[in-house]
Structure formats: C-alpha cells, structure tokens
Length: 299
Image (cartoon, rainbow, N blue to C red; front, side, top):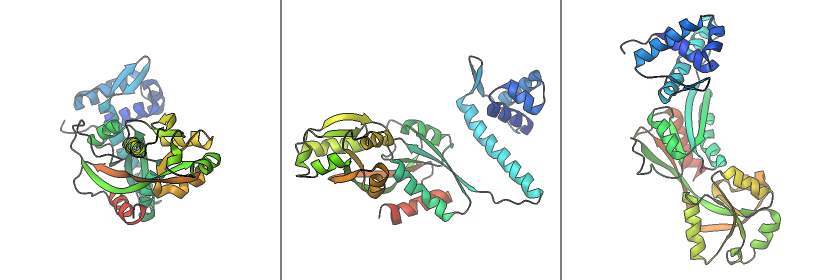
C-alpha cells in the first residue's frame, strides 16, 4: 500500500465508532452500498479484514483495532488543527497509554502514574487493565507505551520487549479491627489457623507468602483467593479475613479500607517493573514515571 486514502479511513472510523454501517450512514449521509464499497476498498488496500460479523454486529478484528486506534489519533489531530485555525488555540496533551497487569495494586499504579500529571501540564493517560500476556500482545502491536507489572517478560511470551525495574516494596499484613487486635498478639505465631484472603496461587506475591508461611510453620485458613486486589480488599472491609498489601501504600490501604496493620511480612518483597518495546526509555511521561519511582515512590 503506497498511499492511504483518508476518505476511506474516515468512513471506516465512523463505522467502528457507531458500531454499524447503518448508523454510520446516518452520520455521513451516504448510502449503505456506497459505505460498504468504501470499506471494502480500504480492506483491499490494507490487505486485511477490518471487521468480522458476529450475529448482526460488526466486530473489529485485531488488525481493525490497530487501524482504529491510529485513525482515532489522526482525526483527533484534525479536530485540533481546525480549532487552532479558528483562533481558539489548543496545546495538544501528551498522551500515554498504559497497560496495568491485574496483579498490580491500584494504589501503587496511581502513585507511579501521578508523576506524569505532576510533570506535564497537559497530560492524557489511557489505562488498560488485564492479564499480562494480553497486555504484552498489545504492547507488541505498539498499542501501549508501557506495561506495569510485578514480573519480567515471561520466557513463554515471544515478543521483543525490555523490562525496566521500577522499584520494590515490602509486604504488610492488614485486617479489620476485630481480627487485627487479636492476631497482633504473638505475631507471627498467632497466624496459624487465622482466616486469610490471599492473591491467586499463580501470582508472584502468593508464592512469596506461601514460602513465608512454610518457613514460620503457619497453616493459614484460606477463606478466599483473588486475582484482583480491589475485590480482596472489599472482602476484608466486610471482616472476612486478613490480607497482604504493599508497604509503600500502607497508610492509604489502612485509610481507604478502614483496616489496621497486623504486622510486617519480613523477607517478602514485591518487585514492580515497566515493560516497553524500547531498550532505552524515550517517551517523556514514561521517563517521568521511572524517575519518580526511584526518587519518590520506592525510595
């Protein structure tokens, strides 16, 4: 494809945004056959299908998702240009698209990302959350600028990416008032048989906790296992058990969940990484996050 027809791209973008050719036809005031023909012309030029049909719905293919993101950026720039030429003026914000692995505590992610808002007056952050493997796939397609996670790129994932250590945190054990006051006594021996809300068994934090339990001869009574830390903390707020959290956000966890610190899980650390496709960080917001992590968040 030597040259992209931006009229075709516009029609595709509106179809994707509206969710159907019928609705796009009403926006663009074009006939349905004409729109369908323009979409086919773009697919022929690209050499890939952009939509697949599921029932009566049009669903973007993987290639379609990539094209849509670029089209969205292109037409956003066009709107800014029009606004500027009308005399309104606008300073285009720095845009950062971040993938946050579900194992990363939301409060830690916020502390890392807030550095970008502090450094840049005009900042737009788009956050995606999900399993690490899916996020790394999007990173490989250049749909994400950085992925925040607690593990380096797994050997099973065959993408060209680079892992940057942002910092490490200790692990604190928390509990609702009635449990915390009881299990603080003779900690950590008191924890044998205590009710626990724990991360999923395949997580790095859970592996460290299991080793710690074995080392101290503790047999926890596991009342819940969670892939999402926010759900785990919601159960803790209702008094269902003790739970671990990152020490770097200890005060925030205690305040937001109305829980108390039970004790420090000595010897267990949480490592946090930023994964990018570049060996050297060059996105200004990513650089700000890395610097803040080392100088403020994990100091």
